[in-house]
Image (cartoon, rainbow, N blue to C red; front, side, top):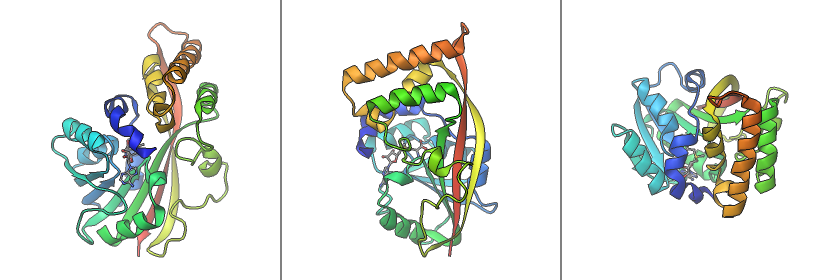
Length: 253
Ligand SMILES: C[S@@+](CC[C@H](N)C(=O)[O-])C[C@H]1O[C@@H](n2cnc3c(N)ncnc32)[C@H](O)[C@@H]1O
């Protein structure tokens, strides 16, 4: 399913939200200089890292996604490769960040590779954006997505029921891997401003929607447009969507 992103790379770049600056700050240790953005996609997170003057390498497994990243961020060091076989030298990064992608990895193989490229004491940070399910529009859109085959817990399988502020001590997504220690979860609340049509376009970028029948996709678009219009009630079609960015940070032994 992860390969489904490739032909939709330009829609991905256009409609997917980036990350709030406070979440990027939470992901980075204060002394970060060399950072690996692993599974970088079209560079949503890469862009924020480059904007902070960091020395960033972006690794991505799909050529179409990587080409979009290189087009949008010509200054980025963009490398084709997978999380399970990172084509880079040992111990060279202060920090590895993974945005919206760790759930796709073969976990143990990827963690061994991440630990290999991090320097001792380096940081691994995993980020996921979720729309806030306490919001009625978010619930309406998600019920439409459920109809088309949204996996339990959302696209990442890590919906807020598993990771949200309501859960006492959610288990770290990297489990109890021996290379990592001191896991911390930081939840950042933020608000996305979007147009109705961008909200409609965003739903079409999820892997299970990309893989659905054309008629089901069109039906989804119409249903989301209807919910968004009722919520907006304004002519300019702008909406505020409350969101939560889940940041898991851990240190390499
Ligand atoms: C939802 S996108 C996230 C992209 C980007 N990190 C972002 O925040 O927008 C997931 C990305 O993970 C990549 N991916 C999935 N499994 C991967 C793996 N094993 N190794 C490298 N990249 C992978 C996909 O190709 C896709 O570009």
